[in-house]
Amino acid sequence: MELKYRQLIADQNLSITCPPDDCQLNTPVEAARWVLSPIDHELNFLPNHLFNQKRGRLLRIQDEARNCGYCSVSLHESVEASENAFRGLSLAIRGKIGYTHIATGLIEAGIGLVTAINPVSRHFELFESDNYQWSNNFTIIAPLQ
Amino acid sequence: MNEVAGYKIDKLPYEALEKVQDILYADGPILTHYRNARGKNILFYWVDFNEVANRWLIWETNKKDLFDYLSGGISLFEYLNERCPEYLFIADMDNNEHVMATVMLDSFAIPEAYYPNENSYFTLGLPIFYDFYLSDGSYISRLRERSYVFNLKPNDVVHATTVAAKEAGQFLINITKSIESYVDITATDRLKNEIGDRGRLNRTISQLKQRTSPRIADTLFGSFEVSIAMDTVALSTGNAEIDDWSKDIITAYQNDVLDVDYSSEEDAVAIIDRFPDAESRKKIFDPIFKILENPAYSLTVSAFNSSFKKDYRKNKPAERFKEKVLPKQTIEEILNQQEQKAKLVTAIFRVPEGGSISDLRKKELLENLLFTQEGNQPTYPITSPIIAGDLVVITTSPIECALTVDNHNHIILAHTKLGLYAEGADMKEVVDAISRQFVELYQRHLDDPGYVDEKTQELDRLVSTTT
Image (cartoon, rainbow over all chains, first blue to last red; front, side, top):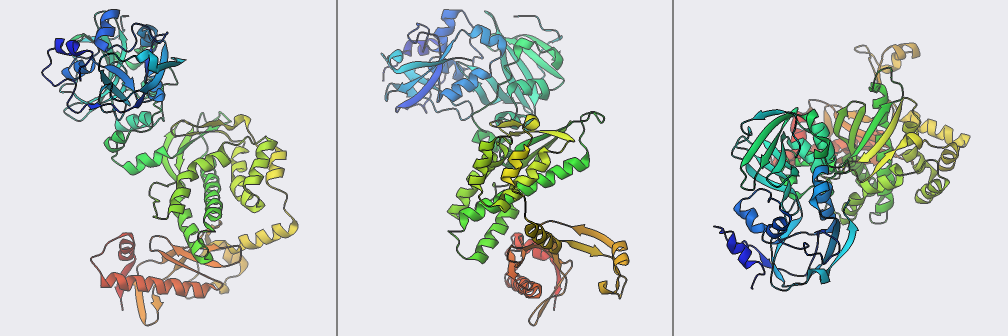
């Protein structure tokens, strides 16, 4: 499978396998994440490396595993998990983070490689293949609060 | 980022940190749990950032506080506000994890903007990973998860926020009565069709009542706060009907008893529909009314995971509500009840050596009265030697059996640990049956001394020699 951000991954010069070996081709899966409105905003559904670069921000804690993860799209398995993470943000971060809404949708089967869902944060990462139209499949459901 | 009032230090006092889990994560870690080489639990909380650094608030925590947060008992706001140590650390890090500045600060000096909102509860349920990680006693963790937190605040401020011990004690007795009655009534209703045999049904209900009897899962001093749980953790019986009932029982008690508007006519009607038998309603709700009408304190209650909260200060039982739910009793009923209660008083008297209780007159009886116990389940001691046919077993202490008299005046004796149960119209007959079961149990234990379980341990505790 040709990954959309293969060059971004190559640029990191990682000594580990990226995407990780235990990633699997995704089955149809519900997911949620923080977004900007409208849903087709150019900064939505970007890997962290690109999002932070465009916004002039540093990444949070760089080790190789995280660095690999920052080449994927960060997702939660449910709206509740996504809201749970947002509720935990400090007021200072809330004011600066820039995301305004929460969106959810069904990711079609076979559009990329997914990591296992983290058993605590209920977060996972998707290394997408080319040409997936996120905005056609995701809908904004509520403002972040 | 703002300057933080604190003491600049060269480096963090934690080394060789190993990541345990990202607890909150979106586009990167928000709250991460680490452990150092000495096994200390340390949290890194992302609180601020600018173009050159991310700022982390770092503190050492313990398993109980982690459990309380992850099970939804406290919010992240409360974690920081009430549970973090006196001193914490702030570290500004670049994206190569190079620490650019470290400050040690007093917990009172945490900037307001570095707190999350007050509703920052972890609502995803205690992750299985942490159920194992935090389980020095998984049982306690699970029990706490099922508990309700009852907070009693005194209405009189003479003794600051403390609650009188006798009020707290009475509260525990009343809430226990209500819960046990609820278990008795709802379990009987659910199981009576499945278990047709009355003896077996009584035995099952008696065991269920004892095993789910409320337990204290946690306490907090300040006002008086106690977490009370029905122990459905260890209840798995292999009986699908009972296991299903036990899954619902905690939520059902919340819906039927705790989450009631005690001034609403509609709720009174709903209670009557749910429990058509007035005696059942009385057993469940009378203790609750006593709690809510106690002028000494105000009560709030919440589910341990904060999914339910109720403040009863403005929810005292209205007279009309009480009259509807607890209809006035007829004289016959009152007399009948008094008679039944009279049969259920256990009393212990000091009797002179060689004497008999029948030798004592009323005044002497009162002078020698050491202990009385009222309630629907006093204990009945069967004293050594325990005789069944030709066999005699000497015990070092009496077999303390739970004594119940049901509505048909059947006497029931039961000993849960030993699995003994007998019922009948005559006390001697019931005691003989229990003695027989005990001796048979002991014989089986002698035949297979290598087998050890709760019963054999209790037998070993009770028995010294046989003849």
